[in-house]
Length: 386
Image (cartoon, rainbow, N blue to C red; front, side, top):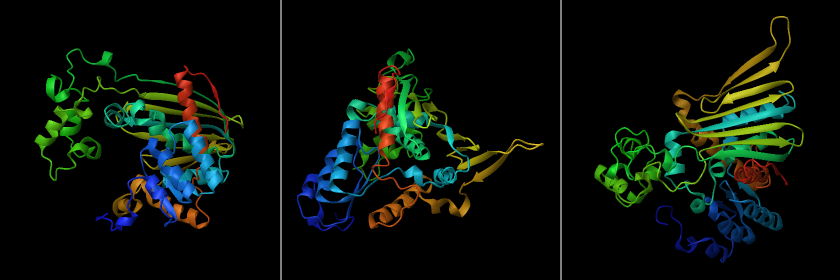
């Protein structure tokens, strides 16, 4: 209240309290945790607020349909934060696809490699490690971007059937070194050599994941190394042996989707890689587009039979260097563009090609839920009913 200058009468303990007073704004920005979206959104949607809602907007199909029905019944404008759609990389690819440059899509392949330090920090030791606690699976928490991207690129057709395989492959007790302890800084002789040692990942690099690791030290103005050591020696999950945590989410998963047009799509999530990576490859009847998000570069290869060659290849390099680095903002330039588009969406102006209403987001979310159901049923194909 003091930091942002809100009057006391406009500060509320929860969404229900806000919904009980007369509507005094046009929109709500809902950035609560995934499993709180239903309880915080529905009272305010019924009150008549429009909303910018974080993804994933629901943690299961029942919640998804409940929220979508509420929006439909109340006529709200709700936009979902699929921020990667707004990055120069993906938006440029979508523009090429929408213009018909590679013809009708035959197959689309997406992949995400989650780096070893991100996987261990967020999905083994961190807040998304256990689906019973966080209410989201690994695929939903990490790859709803990727499945949304696939649905966006394939918007001329709909998914009809899906299957998936995946498991917790690496971080489980039976894979722990024989001499491993239970807490890195307390009883483990491998504290200086294990690649997942809390000392090596967090004390030696205290700023990399500071927002997560040191959350319990937020009340200390200038935490010291001793404060950090004591936290990791205590009851912090980040101080536990990586192989002996209570994680239950998968660390790798593959998804196969069949579309109504006959096209197919695959997504591969692989955790524990040496570096983060997102790639996309779209093959059409006239050519193909393939690229690397981290490099912000893609290629457009078109069928062009001649006596000397069989194709033309255009390189599109969107990398930002030098003085332009700060100009694009967060998420590769997506954050600011999303905010701008939301304002247009609410005002009734024409939004960009990337704009994602809640109705546009249903297919991607449903594919995630059904992929996880298939995985739990040993790859049993699931029908997609939109």
